[in-house]
Length: 257
Image (cartoon, rainbow, N blue to C red; front, side, top):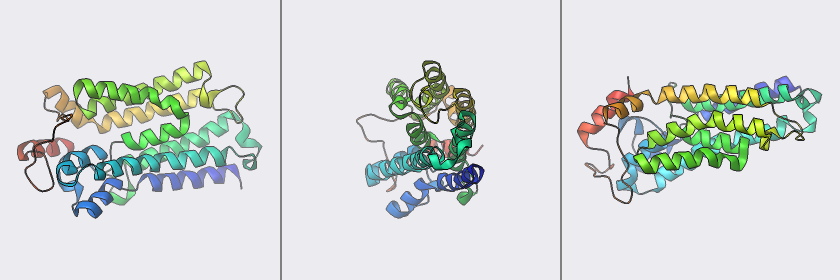
């Protein structure tokens, strides 16, 4: 199959897979609710955690995390294998072409998660799916941003701060990997990948995800961003385990701006 056709097919498929509203489906099946009508209104793992942890335990948010991770990991992993296979033709053995094709698949998955076609382009914030995408791309080097996320989360007890710190570290991680010729960028790797393309790609993704967190940033600056309570239950007011009504209304209003 022609490499360009391969790339187009993978890109379309990656966007459609990335668009699957995992949190919405999990909450509907598990709790019979539309998660968009609870908490911040976001369909991502963090809102599932806040709204359902007390009433339905940890399984709903863990499933959301795992499935969001999978929908990022699987398309990119398959793209790396198929687009880089010897059957892909000589064009894909050229680093610039190979890197561009893989980058398009990565971008499609992330845009699908952030702006899903199935739910009027109102998606998650890209963290769990991004973790899957970058795990497929750089393997155990993803522990660098994961460690940064954990440190900032433990210090601040705010998922949003951990997420923002981690996503900012992603382009830096790719830059360092390119300089050191680690992983995807090893000089003897066939086909090789071009660091510059992935640094630009991850910078664009980071900026989009930061934009998606604008309401969180506003609440952080106001000192009103919800914190997770490590080792303790979050007070609930209903059987869905939602946040207090006043806080919920304010968070949802900010999220809709």
